[in-house]
Length: 90
Image (cartoon, rainbow, N blue to C red; front, top):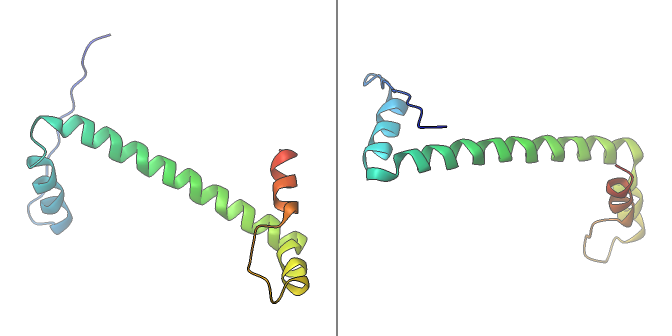
């Protein structure tokens, strides 16, 4: 497979477009690598946020954190063993 090309247009009336254009312009020959890394990083962050939201929901529903916090009020907060069990069961 060869190369594929996409042309971008930036609207100079929009501040976000101007900032993006300047960032890309300053990347020299590394523009494509910069775009690829940025897009993939955003995707990974979305996946992480989705996992965090799911964990919060599970923990809230199961009251795992609340029970452990009552038992260990004076100790430092740590991840309950039950959370790791949830991952093992997935």
